Image (cartoon, one colour):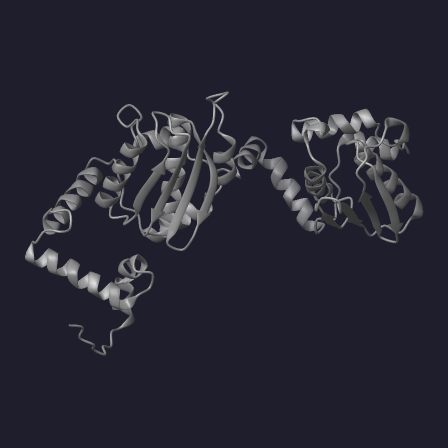
Length: 364
């Protein structure tokens, strides 16, 4: 029989229900039922769903945590401070050795064992996070997915990061996708072959270490980067950032050669122009154009058969506009795609065709 009652409770008690509200997706009635059940188990010393004495288990977990603190292996940290630390180091990779302090690679070698261990650790640490895994059969799974549910979203992020690094280094499973919601974090993995064990797999770096290389560069030359950022801010980012040989060519009244443009492209992408589709070239060009800051804005379309690039600039001198048109025409011709170029005040439009151009048509 369902009994309906209207109750009034202070906000402080609602705050204490937060873990149960998160577990039940904000359903207050369900949260209160879980709270009553938990209190009943604790007071009566009855067993939970897994047949273990809940009250005794709570005490055991508390003793476990206290023991780690006394041994100075763990520290008590306010959750707000820990959230701040996690949020402000997002994009930086955890050191491999740090992860191995948590998950011993000599003892834990299977995915199922990793998940069981992390769930046990979560319970002992009271992080209230549940880890589930699905993976293809076989001694070396080709694919896998981790689902981390409930608990604090910041704690889930750091746990997903740690598990992803462990699976990448120990089981050759790189991150293929990462999806985060208010109460769930999902990570998808796919097998890959390590070419260099000292390097971080691309997927792991993309999804969990996007700021890693930037941070390392700042550490190498902190004064340079501080001064550069200060200068850009003072000039409201109205500064150019072009390669030295491109600058030299413009100053001399010439344009970079086709060979030079191709070399520059390979230095930036690590691959020759032929390795990319037209749509990929357009996306790469957009990133370079906005970074160089030669123009003020860009509009692109990568839909097959309708590809175009529209460059927006604020130059009024005719010679400057002509030089820009020739320069960017050479850039696009260096990737062997034909196009039609149209110029208007403060705008250069490149509309691409389907047949490649020959070197004889290049603008010099």
